[in-house]
Amino acid sequence: MCEPKNEDEMKLITPILFLLFVIAACKSVERNLDVQQQIVEESDFTIAFGSCNKAEFSNVLWDDILKTSPDVWIWGGDIVYADTDNMTKLKEAYATQNNVEGYKVLKSSVPVIGTWDDHDYGVNDGGVEFKAKKGSQQQFLDFMGVSKTSTRRQQEGVYAVHDYDTPKGSVKILVLDTRYFRTALTKDTETNKRNKPNVYGEGTVLGEVQWEWLENELNTSKADFNILVSSIQVLSYEHGFETWGNFPHEVDKLKKMIASSKAKGVAIISGDRHISEFSKTNIESVSYPLIDFTSSGLTHVYADFTSEENKYRVGEVVPVISFGTLSFDFEVNKITYKIVGDNSEVLGSLEQAY
Image 1: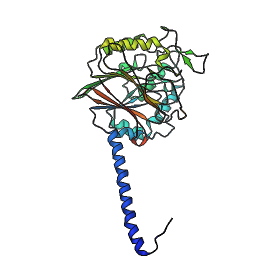
Image 2: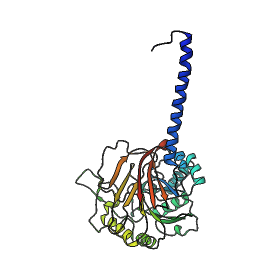
Image 3: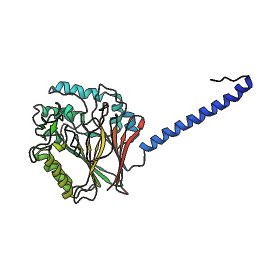
Image 4: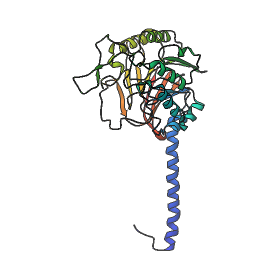
């Protein structure tokens, strides 16, 4: 490195260095503003959601979630990793999450709704056979702040409907329960995949009562958009993990129900996979494509991810800690979907008109 030869040269270099520092600082501020503009864009209604959250891990995303100014936060499942039929331990796990400082700030200013997945339900890949599911449901409803007198305390399963009306339009959120009624999976003994699809027509994801409820909600919906919350992926099915694709007849039933209901702007948000991605397919007699937006996970991800088949994928898989947002534009009937990481970095996006 060359050094100045005399004091006059030093006097000349000093202001130049200062100017370069100021320019660099301004560019850094501009970049940060660009990131914020990407996140906090004009929106008539905003959903933020995520899944796969370990309270004992540091969650660096709570401040980023707040920066999106969400109208509602949706838990997509695996809120805690309890994996227990001991209700005292489950209650303690939820209490730990409730005491996370960033989450406390979020829930003090944003409505919180959502569903469970297997690890907060109580057993990995668990379904209808889980003996402690009634007690687990009550602990989940306690965590979600559901009134002790709510009808949800008497029903089987945690499925629920939430309606949001704004001066410009409305959103119906249909939270599904893919655990309480889900029948047995078929283990794959022929490949290195965990599961394979059941014989067509055998088994269920939602169960009879929940299917009837969903059909009625879609058939009678007047909302501009109808968002289905599924803890497991609906469209991606080739990976061999948990997915609606393990019950292919249930996927077909859902598609037919969406088509026959004439419900507007139906879309799916899902979790579970420890990766984030967009999946999209067309349904006969429906004027818009069905999107399944998977956002997972909030505190831990499949960091060693290399590849995975998904015939419906749009864009790239994001194996980075992140959450999802849906920004609604009622005037042009559009949703902007975003995968958002730490420091409000947009890791993936998709726009869809309805």
